[in-house]
Length: 80
Image (cartoon, rainbow, N blue to C red; front, side):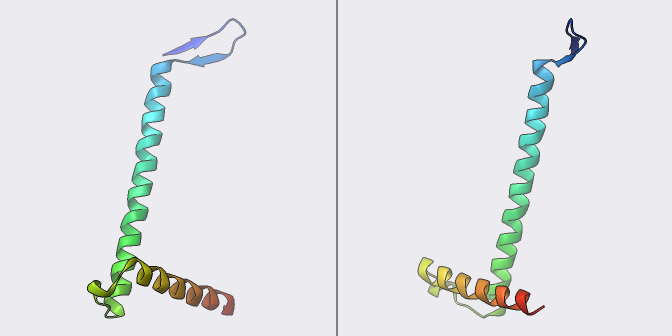
């Protein structure tokens, strides 16, 4: 429902705004879910390609490996 005010402006009804807000939240959640899928696939591929043992991947090891991979990728992007 659209309501026109006395100055000729348009006021969008609350229910329409709520619908739009719900759509936006759903879209943001979809984007977040897709980012998580990509992060999981990337991590899985790195672990697989490097033949890493899940038992040896503590939080400290993960942070250290992530830092090394990040530094490597940054160096490669500077080279190009």
